[in-house]
Image (cartoon, rainbow, N blue to C red; front, side, top):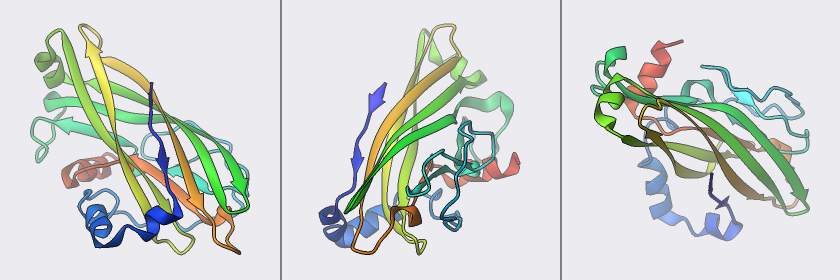
Length: 211
């Protein structure tokens, strides 16, 4: 298991400046090509399994932020020719399978401990190229969305999967911690934490054609 800590502080937000804005803009198409769903304060979902192509909301108390995986970026498929994806040219793929979290609300902040489960699969090209061992990395992000729909922060992580000889399936769990500072009068339930794969334009278009 890998453990990453994406801890957001108020000082970090205030010190981002121009370079921080440029970094967010350069991170790829997946977060910029999606219209963020409106926050539905008070919603209490009980489902945790991520269904292919469907947005999934974690089971958290109603005084916590919503934690969700958007359906169209819940999977990533890597092809030898991304412009013309064919099943026989699949290198490997990965998808979110479950999402779980606990939430702790303090007077001036809210902290979530997040567990994300993934399944990976080698494609025909990956099996040919892997030899005795194949190692692939899949980028995914965690972004904090304000009650007004603005992107407050975005962190990108690398999900690494090693496929040993004869093993074309992998399962892995990553654990993250996310803290959001709260100003006077703000409630945690108005925020959203969105998770998904950091997709190229070709990868996002492929996902959209699979619906």
